[in-house]
Image 1 (tube, rainbow, N blue to C red):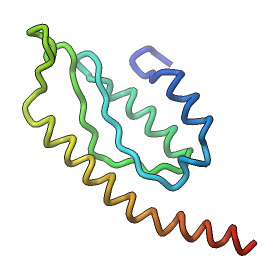
Image 2: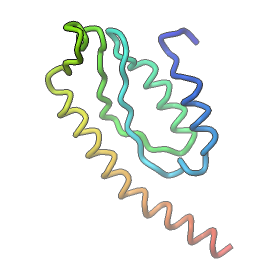
Image 3: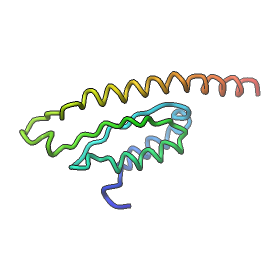
Image 4: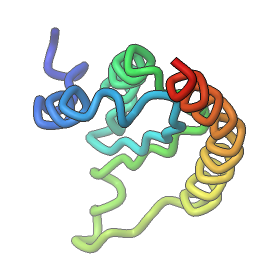
Length: 112
């Protein structure tokens, strides 16, 4: 895997360690990096999350660090706050929908 497609090994290890706790949950991904703002790594992470039975939302805010820190202090690009709010709205909606899935699995496990 080339360096621009990687997410940290620590993230992968943490996700694998609590595999069952991630099942049937919703997640949003915020990426950051150079000019591409880490979007390729975020897409690779999305594949891993799918294997953990996590529903990722499509809204994906990305922060390009080069222009954001061009003045020496972090200055978010216009619309970043709207993008983050949109992602969080999607995560909340999916979380509510997946609650029923988790409850059904818990009932099935208790009945067995």
